[in-house]
Length: 164
Ligand code: FES
Image (cartoon, rainbow, N blue to C red; front, top):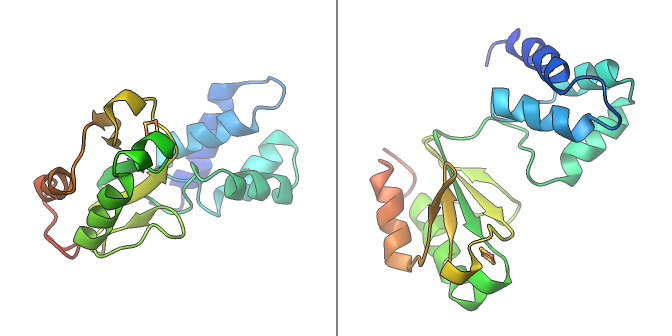
């Protein structure tokens, strides 16, 4: 990400959302769509553009797990960690994905060492009837098993341990 990419993304995001009450969340979504994350450098620019304090913007970014602080990997794999998926073996799905990539989602989204895959815990994808479920770059993956999630990660070109 170049240094100019952040102000350009913030300006475009603010222009896209336009003047309306309480646009902060929409601007944050728009910045993340452009940059893949909401980097630290975007926070003062958003605060100025929306006439908010930096603390307000920072607080919102850190409150919602959806907003990433650093760019994601080439692939974003969102593993559902909500009730219906857990009841259908979701813990084993998450554990196998973490083990395969050599990462832990204990503190939220995490990217494999090679930068190819970001593994992200999410809380219900609306696919409960087909649980356990995940999304790979917004593509639903359902009725997962420990074996199928490992095959899915291998299919993204990542070797065990998170290397190519
Ligand atoms: S609980 Fe996992 S999709 Fe709803």
